[in-house]
Structures are given as structure tokens and as C-alpha cells.
Length: 173
Image (cartoon, rainbow, N blue to C red):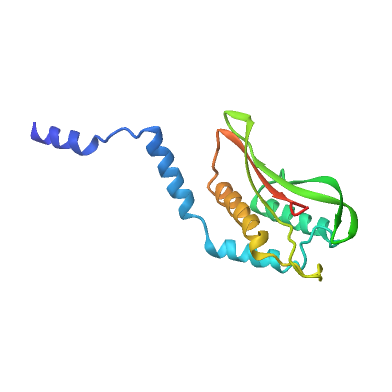
């Protein structure tokens, strides 16, 4: 009789609530965030030279970010282009700009979308707009978006609602 009670007590455990399960998933995902990965992405973005939206390389920068999303595993990564006309520092610019979009489709509510985003363009208070590396504005935000996307993909996370990852272009304008 005591043996049966011992087995019963040691094999029974409290049913985990939805909140407990959510907490466990969050802890697992947080443990996989890599400071080195974020640092490397910030440096990678900085090393592109200028990320000023009118520097002439905006499409190249967007394509590199799109490739990064694809390398992580987001085969649906794409560019969303839009035209910007803006006078900046007494110069009139007219140029195509690009948002980079990747998404993790929701299982239960795919039409309900949560956006995780950061802008990748930058403007410094200098006159030389060909050198605008922008670590804090906003390579760090874009690196965080890439890292969140990486961690969710590597953990095969299945959200109930769609998560859209956006790297915004021309935010400064």
C-alpha cells in the first residue's frame, strides 16, 4: 500500500496552465537570444557605409536585409517599394525606397498581424551623407528585429497570429 502511494505521489504532477506553458516558451526563446548575433548584425549594417535613404544605395541595402531574412529561413521575405519626394537640406530628392518584409504565419488567426519592426536608414548631423553608419539609429533596432526573427524560426515557433517582421526604409524622411 505504501509503495502504491509513493509511486502515485512521485508520478503525479500539477497540470501546467496555459500561463505556465507561455512562460516556459518565453524563457526558452529568451535564452536563445545571442548578444554576439545582435552585435554582428549591427556591425554588418554599419559596414554598409551609408544607410541614408537618398545616398543611392537604398535598394542594395534593402536587398542585403532581404537576403539576411532568407538566410534565416524566411522564404517569403520581400521588398515593398514606395516613391519618396522630399526636400532635405535644401536638396530635392525623388527616389524609390524599400521596406523589407518577412512573416511567420499564424496558425489560428493568420489575418491578425503583429508587427515587429525597426528602421534601417539613418541621418547624421554631418554634411557628408555618404558615410552614415548609424549604429544607434537604427542598426540596433534592425538587428533586434533580425534576432527575434532568427530565434523564432530556429525554435520552430508557431504563433497563433501572424508575426510580420519589417525593416523600414526612409523612416527618417
